[in-house]
Image (tube, rainbow, N blue to C red; front, side, top):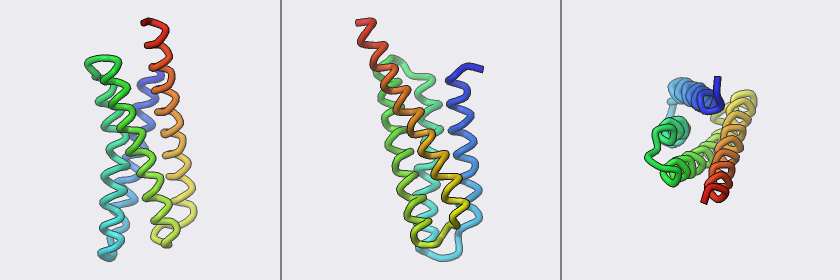
Length: 122
């Protein structure tokens, strides 16, 4: 299996976990608002990675990954808010935050690698 498929699988699995968390956590208005933010950003990461796989150019690939990077970092933020306000437990936070920061590192690394390859080929 190549790196791109692993990248897609990890981001897809992460999105599924986010959806399951958000479906289980809708008891009050504030929680619902925060869950919708988390759901939007957490699922956008994988969708943008998938879009990047079908990019029209190297610049488009980098751009899609850059947006995915922003969504991933935003997901970390929402997870931190939910944890600090006791809306998710420590185990949920640690697992999902670890996965989101791992994805974030993978995305950043892919962007840097692609930019460096592009420079070498120029």
